[in-house]
Length: 75
Image (cartoon, rainbow, N blue to C red; front, side):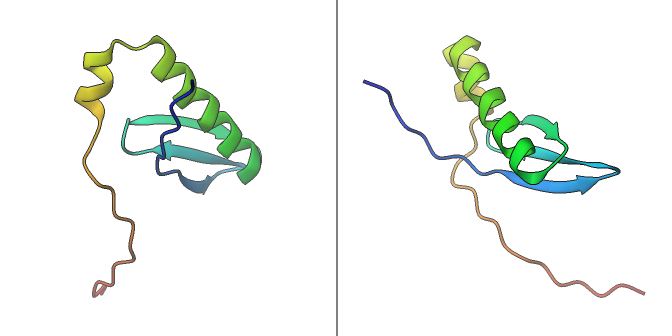
């Protein structure tokens, strides 16, 4: 039986493409579109989980991840 885990995907535009980051595991990938970057990140996370030692995975795992906006005074 496959264990399904939920991770955060942060995707942002950089130059002519997109960068995708999974902050819980500190795994990143990229793609030419948001969809491609997301799919590539999914594959990178799956490969990392398949190949990494359990202690490395546990060492990288963060607790609960909260994503929110932040307002700051600038200038």
